Amino acid sequence: MNPSLLKYRGRLKALSPEARRRLMDRTGTSDARVAQRTADIIARVRRDGDKALREMAREFDRAELQSLEVPRSVCEAALASLEPKLKDALTRASRNIAKAHAAQKPQATEVETEPGIIVGRRPDPLGRVGVYAPGGRAVYPSSVLMGVVPAKVAGVGEVIVCSPPGPDGKLSEGVLAAAALAGADRVFALGGAGAVAALAYGTESVPRVDRIVGPGNAYVAAAKLQVVDAVAIDAPAGPSEILVVADSSADPEAVAREMLAQAEHDPDACCVTVAVGDVLAQAVAAAVERAAARAKRQEIVTRALSERGAVLSVDSLEEAWPFVADFAPEHLLIATTSPLEELPKARNAGTVFVGQYASVAYGDYMTGANHVLPTAGLARAYSGLSVLDFYRWTTYQRVTRDAAARLADDVGLLADSEGLFAHAEAARGWRKS
Image (spheres, rainbow, N blue to C red):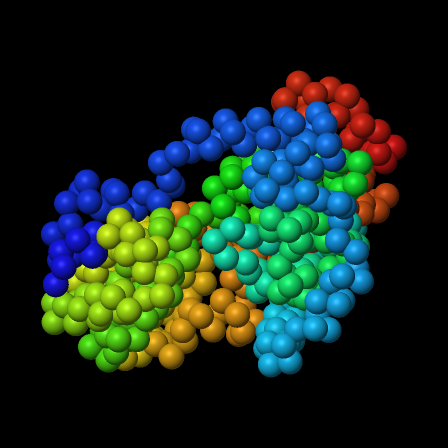
């Protein structure tokens, strides 16, 4: 076994505090530099609008844009010309995403807290959202579907897609086709932090949105965090990651395939297996080495595994779950004898794949669950993108005349205690004489 292929090997409980800290810390190392460059880009877009966007297309994408916006007819033509089997697969994925997210639609609620006092909460679809679709090392039509379809299911008024152009100034045919299929209202050939800034603050051509969703590179992630004073965002996201919990029933080759599938995304991807028993851990590590040796994206895979790859052994599944909760992975695969029995123990994961047949690849494309997920341990507090991200809630209260009289004295007492005497007067004004 090449000792350099996987960064960490051995027993989980024997992992040094420093090694454990490094494994848990997936926040990146160039944050300050990226943050400053991102701030400069945002400032340019706010100052110069479309002019800045065109200049940055030349600088970063080597593209001369005739128009920032892609005509609807171009998107529809891309969908019509798509290879039939690929079009069928995208259509199937879109249908499943719509079905899964429609089941998540929230309902209005009302409760009578006391006689005559009604408190209600109503979900209202957002007016306009921006969906970012990555480019660069790869393009992701599936990410277009994951952002646009739930927004349309929620009833968002206008859905705008931004994706970086190639040197010819055009977007990927797959991205254009997915935008048309999902029902995006407008599409712009804009990438990186500049696209995020345009969506957040608006330009002459790009309208300001209420929320920005979708994955992207370090600059996109940094930009989203920097524009939260102007727009809502989904969970901050970084490089892909997977944690596999496996026992003796798991196929080591299948576990290795799952690790490689995430490793090929990004050199900074984090791929970890926690295996019950040293024998299984050794078999998984060997399978990972074999799979890496034949990987088509070998340079990316090798770097990811050598810098953030781990196969660790535990004595029992009970030993694994506290580590899972601390690690809070983007993707958690439970490859055990009775995965449904283990599912309630799985805490703090972006999404859980139950059983070794539930490949993460299926969730990335076709099951209908969303693949826009929290990374870097943020699954401790954030959830994956869902239809709920495309609503805001309106809370309302109704109070009858009799209920107002019953509230008056106690509310006045509380207001006086806080020194808010006009509040007290407003409340006591409805006393019954």
